[in-house]
Amino acid sequence: MQPRKNKSVLIIIIILLVIMASFSIISIYFKFSVPSETKEETPKKEQTEEPTIDNANYKDGKLYFYDKDNNLIGDYTCKKAPCSYAVSEIDDKDYAIDSLETETAPINVILNNYAFINDNNNVILYKINTKEEIETFKAVKNYDNMMPEEYVIVKDSNNKWGIIKLGENIERIANFDYDFIGIKNILINNKLDVTNFIIKKENLWGIIDNTGDLMSNYLSGEITSFNDVLISVKNNDIYYLYDYNGKRVVDENGFNYISFVDKFINIVDKNNNLYIYDYINDKKISSNMNLKGKDYKEAFQSSYNKETNTIDVSIDGKVYNYNVS
Image 1 (cartoon, rainbow, N blue to C red):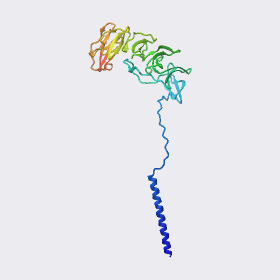
Image 2 (image 1 turned 45 degrees about the vertical axis):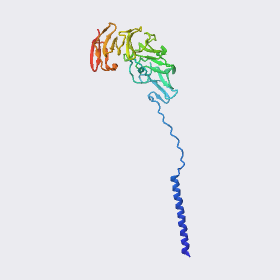
Image 3 (image 1 turned 30 degrees about the vertical axis):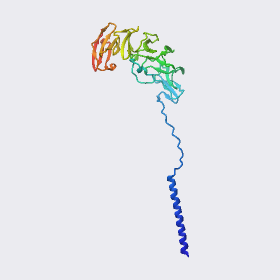
Image 4 (image 1 turned 180 degrees about the vertical axis):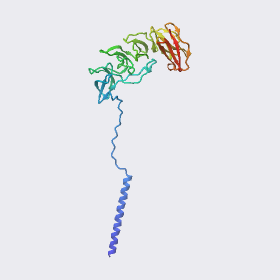
């Protein structure tokens, strides 16, 4: 009877092994076919790029000021870090004014005592030695430090421009009355000439001096440049010459282009001929030079040579000299 008993035990063991194998197969099936409950990942916080800061001037919520010899002369605690030196507004390109083209740069410390600070979406005029916030503006313009440092063009909260002069005291030399203030492209000792300014007010244009007095009658059309006696105005792509009383002179029908060289005038007529004109003596001082291209500002360069008393004109690499005596 022993062999039959052993046979029964063997059958039971086989059955148990089959059952265990079945459970293993079922377990493996559910592991790979039924989605498991996963822990929800916390979304990653987006990295926001901080404004570019001049590390030499800003650190840990403060702005530092240095004189021209790189000596530390003061600091300012940001209202909303990071803050920075303000940069000059560039709006001349929106108009026909013949202005100096500059690259954006922070406005330097002025007279070792004033700074314009860009903080919390405002431009703050800050007095360094007394840590005093003098006034808040919407924008500031000094042609990327090319104006004499004490003169600054500033915009108020009503989007109107004025002019201030910095010194021991702050002088407002032009009230906030203007939609635009600009300076013609004339350098004296490597700084822009601030004797006079071009202004726009209620769609009319004029010239004020550096005390804020109006020097010309108001004109329709955009002032591009001027000299001591005449003003160049662009209207519907035609250039006209006016005197300071608002009278149109030389040619009522206008020209293709006008610019000034010292007291003389570069004129491009309707036939694309360039010539140099002496308004005071009412005469041409050059022959006609035909310009093929219509980008007149780039088509030629002219300059007054005091040593030779000539106007030197360069066209396509060729230089023409015209005596002005």
